[in-house]
Amino acid sequence: MELNIKEPGREHQTDAIIIGAGPVGLFAVFELGLLDINCHLVDILEFPGGQCSELYPEKPIYDIPALPIVMGQELTDNLIKQIKPFNPVFHLGQMASELKWNKLKNLWEMKTNENTKIFSKVIVIAAGGGSFVPKKPPLSNLDKFENLGGVQYAVRKIDNFKDKNILISGGGDSALDWAVNLAPISKMLTLVHRRDDFRATPDTVSKMHQMREKGLIDLVIGQVKELKGENKLEEILISSIDNMDQKTIKCDVLLPFFGLTMKLGPIANFGINFEQNLIPVDTEKFETSEKSIFAIGDINSYPGKLKLILSGFHEAALMSQAAHGYVYPEKKIRFQYTTASSSLQKKLGVYNK
Image (cartoon, rainbow, N blue to C red; front, side):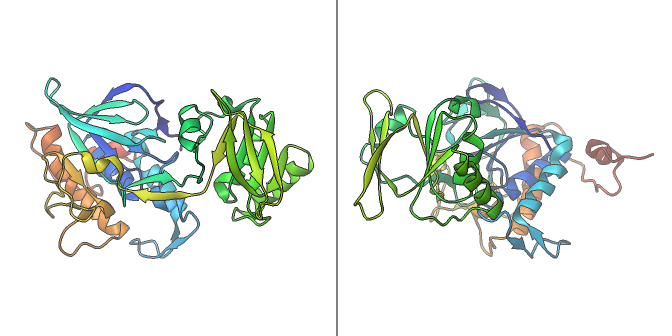
């Protein structure tokens, strides 16, 4: 399914903002959509699916009802297919950084770290354990070159890397996938890893070696030691693991792919109550200490809470019923079953007379 992804830096208005595009956030789109509530999703990752897609796309999950076994990515793909009729808007590769009540518009105003601004009546926090943030290399002048654009942790537009001297550091799927994809358009691509053994899929490793033999990729066994340049990144010093050998190469951009770690991030400053990095909610509406802000999935806390995907699905359904009152305060909700309701079936595109 082709996702409705918006470029950063623009202004939008919707009914509900969902922070987190993991399985629970995606299913919330479905439950809200049945109630005519439009959604925008914001996620720091470059793709939907959360941990299922980032950490264990090929890991089997055994406790999803009616699915004896399903892979993490397969579950994500099915959820995306399920919400297709509601055409949700995705803001990927962005972190929800600020949230405040806009008195003039009488709406929540959320900003991202990429200067996207979204107004909504309802906020749904489905952020799992928090935001995925990249693990950074231990380099003394890293901040300087991050600010200059010489160090980046994601590829948002491939064209931005055309005819550049690129150095990719890492040995996992992200490192090798981008090495293979960027090498054909780069001036020169250098892949640096601590050992000649990679954690990526065998097919990608094979492609990398083929491109290396063709001279498209320069594989260096070693580590990045120093970044050099005045007003931009110009060179990188690479050393062998034992520091006995060193060499300097020309470089316009460094892409370190060392994996991701989870941090609560700016959500902690949204003005809602937290207890031990979790958000306490009631079990009727899954509402937080702030009216019209809900929390579902692993980020919330209540007596008897189980951190299971299926629990998050249940929370999404009840949350949606409560959210309806904020989006349509004058409209009484009428509970319907998808098996019997022609109006719901029409929304889903499955109605047959």
